[in-house]
Image 1: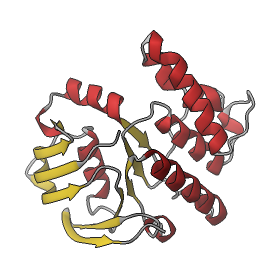
Image 2 (image 1 turned 60 degrees about the vertical axis):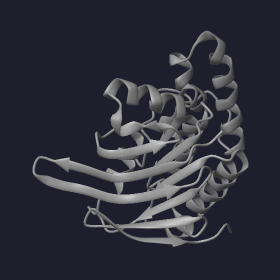
Image 3 (image 1 turned 90 degrees about the vertical axis):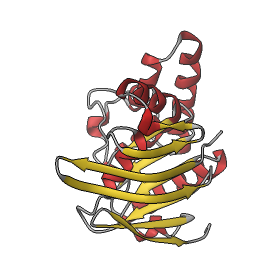
Image 4 (image 1 turned 180 degrees about the vertical axis):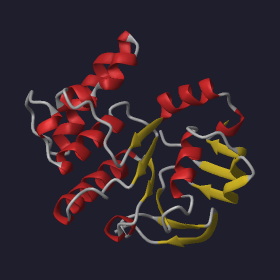
Amino acid sequence: MSLSLNLSDLTVVAGARTLLRVPSLSLPAGSLIGVRGPSGAGKSTLLYALSGLLAAKGSVRWGQTDLAQLSAERRTAFRAAHMGLIFQDYLLFEELSPRANASLAALFSTSGDRAQVNARAADRLDRLGVPRDSRSVASFSGGERQRVAVARALATDPAILLADEPTASLDRPAADQLIDDLVALVRDSGKTLIAVSHDLHLLDRLDRVLTIRDGQLTDDTRVGTA
């Protein structure tokens, strides 16, 4: 089950500097949203505020939960229960196999959930075309690593998927294949996806694209569902 997002008077500050200000934004559950803008505009700041990795003022309401009103510990618990994160730099354990990396969440799951997380990780790796072998990801290409990172993010079946430049380190063929697979996986399961990206090939496949400039939301464009 996915979750809607409603922002009200969202503000992120660092000292006396305002990094981000979004007066209002509503996204239905199951939306596929892109976030674009120049470097340093506040795109990643928005993503981290939406995930609870950054403390924010105002309201960040996922469903009935206002993330901005929770303590750091409760934000962490909400993130673990409802979110999958995809980072540009993969953040994999180089010495582990793809299966071990993708199923890391099983180590922190209850005994009843552990088997499901492991099975889901294996399924996502298969759907993403990651080789089924025991070699470590240290020998994998950039495209293969990013696919392992996507499988890891999806292994807990999160309602929300947040991605920071998921195709930035990939060549065009690898990026296009990842876009096809990621969009299909998200649409098939009805998840909410919010992806920060400069990649027009990815942005054109989403429902809406938000533009951030100088810490402000300056444009909200509906794209389509190609």
